[in-house]
Image 1 (cartoon, helix red, strand yellow):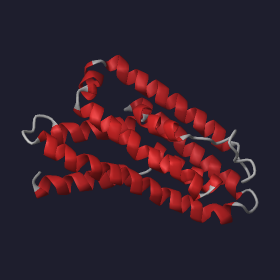
Image 2 (cartoon, one colour):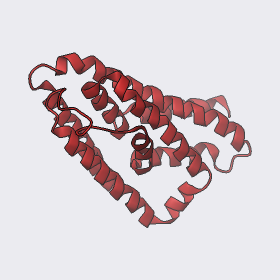
Image 3 (spheres, one colour):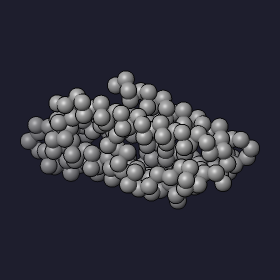
Length: 199
């Protein structure tokens, strides 16, 4: 892969991975509510799910999704429903004691599966496959560079947001700060869900 293409990939990866979305919002909220160690299972799940999504798109699932618009609506509907459910669960946690397993629990596998109903992840994966892999004679060497690079972006962007959430944990434990923080994070999820409907 030429250096100019790799540089463009790095710029796109930075913009898409570090901009707020469902993954980074949940990484922040999980770390703020449960601490960094508990958020790490989600932080680690995102690149795994993302990597599988990119591979499936590279091997034809993306083309199927583009060819069958009803599948796009299914992805959107499930994604929006899941984000709204998470927002509802998150908005009710007002103290660290309330942020328990029953209120805000996202397992490793849920975190990985979230990538398949995250329209931002689909758009990114389809863009990367179309721009850097599809029809290229050096498909396999490109994939071997692209996949670990983008999985690293997924990991480190979510880790950065989780570290911010963990850093705020002590400050959020005072008064109603956590409740308002969680409501703001829930609002970000609702806005993301609304955006997903429009794209």
